[in-house]
Length: 209
Ligand SMILES: C[S@@+](CC[C@H](N)C(=O)[O-])C[C@H]1O[C@@H](n2cnc3c(N)ncnc32)[C@H](O)[C@@H]1O
Image 1 (cartoon, rainbow, N blue to C red):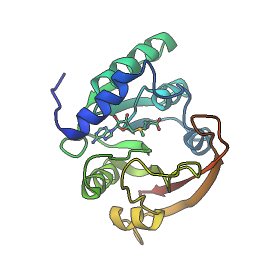
Image 2 (tube, rainbow, N blue to C red; image 1 turned 45 degrees about the horizontal axis):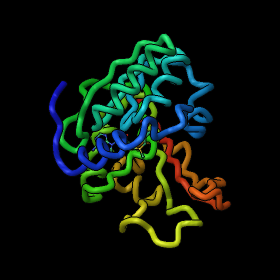
Image 3 (cartoon, helix red, strand yellow; image 1 turned 180 degrees about the vertical axis):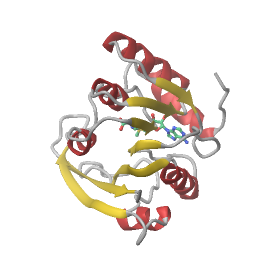
C-alpha cells in the first residue's frame, strides 16, 4: 500500500484506531434513496470509511472502487466486504494529493469532510470527483449543513458549505443537469441520548452525454 502521511491522515487514522468501529456498517440512507432504482454500472466511493456504502453498492451489482485516507478504515472495510462475499477494489489515497484513475457511472462523496485541511483542498477533491464522472453519469455529494442541535460548543471551527457553494466549486452550472439540490433535517441523538436534529445537504448532478 502507498504510504500516506500528514495531519489529515493522522486525524482519521487515530479516529479509527481509537474505536473498534466508528460507523454503523449500514449504507447512508440518502445514497440508498438516490441509487436504489438506478441500473448498476461502475461506482467510485470517495472517503468510504468502513465500507458501508461500498458494500451496499456492490450488493446492488455495482463494480465499486472505494477510497480512503485511513489504512485502518480500508482494512476494516475489506474484511466486511469479504464477510459479505462482495468484491470491491480498495485504493488508499489522500484525495487532496492523488486520485483514482478512470471514469465512473456514479461518483459518490458522502460526508467527505476534511477536518484538518483547508476548504480549498476539499474543493479541489470535489472538482476531481466531477472530472471522474463518465458522460451521462452521476455525481452525488452529501455533506453536513451544520452541527447537531444538542452540541453547545463545536469541537472546532468549520464552515459547512451549502449546496450552492458546492455547485460553484464544481463549476458545472449551466453545463450539467442539477437533478437535486436539497437540505434534509434528520433526528440525531446526542452521546447521552439527548434528542436533537442535524441538517445535511445533498447534491445530485448529471454530466451530459
Ligand atoms: C465523515 S467520514 C464519512 C465516511 C463514509 N463516507 C460515511 O458516510 O459513512 C469521512 C471519511 O473520509 C475520509 N477522508 C477524509 N479526508 C480524506 C482525504 N483527504 N482523502 C481520502 N479520504 C479522506 C476519512 O478517513 C473518513 O473515512
